Image (cartoon, rainbow, N blue to C red; front, side, top):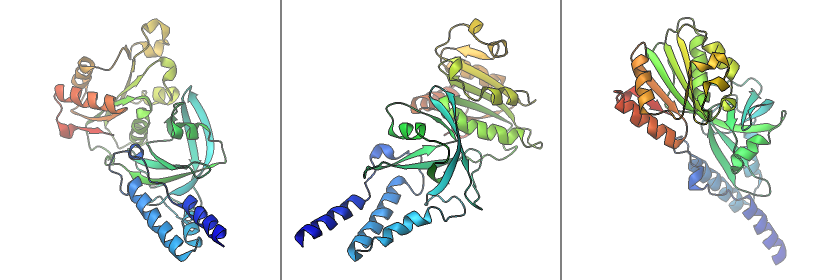
Length: 304
């Protein structure tokens, strides 16, 4: 009798939600936060355990596939339709909308991805700005994304984000992106070029280590053909323009995006710019400082 009770107690403990690590909070002010969801799930687990009714836990899993549109507080299941490797560590993943659902995601917003490890491991959550994801060998979430195959399912909740693009709200957008920070810029950029009535100028600056690291090359070249779009590249580990295709030589700088070049870009803008910045924490901090030095005020830029 005691052995059966011990086994039952062990089974309940395995079902107990795992408290997130501080590093699993994206820090972007998402509401509800990953910690809010943990406390919600913990309360559900405690209620189910007190009543010895595991069906109370299964109701959450059943609800994951029943919602008709994205909601910040609930994960929704999306089927992976295609996975394309764009560079050695960057993937583009396309998802199919379930049933009659509506995405409800506007340019500039992002979603939260959930990953629960096998064998009772912790649940990880990560902010993802687009379907382009950069993978690192040491990252648990990166290894999870890298393992995705068409036909599998991923769980998302959202949308989140304080920046929501509105047509013609700004005279010109100065977009400063590093690595996969390009992804949210592309969604805003496409919304502009897809709208004939949107006359916003755009100067897009994309920072990568090498030319081979640039993803969505064809799309960026097509966008640069529009009358109101300019694209530039900054490559930190390339040294000579002779190694680049002719179409990239005049619009590529080498080294790092510094204060001098930011000043030139701001001065070259055709209208007073509003800047968008997305990249690593260090990149974002540096760009904010450079923009202030170039004469922009704190209400003239947004940091993703």
